[in-house]
Image (cartoon, rainbow, N blue to C red; front, side):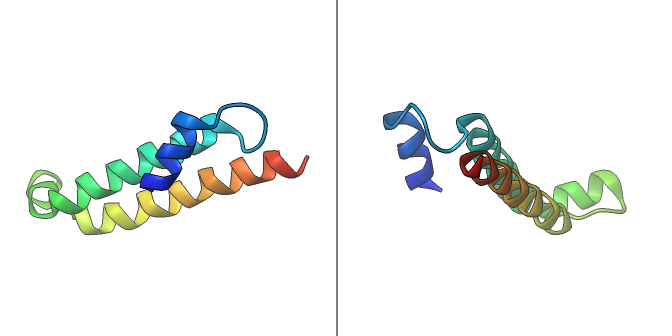
Length: 74
């Protein structure tokens, strides 16, 4: 993820769709926050734990990366 951030900051131009990659990075960061506050999320919701939310957000981050690569192939 750090390499992707470096690529987004240094290499602008044609290629992978940058907005989708920023979405990937942001969603991954949210997943890490959810993981860190696992018990607090469960206490607040009573249904969903931060660990479960981390997996959902991680899958969403992969989807954004797929969209970025898909734009590259067009």
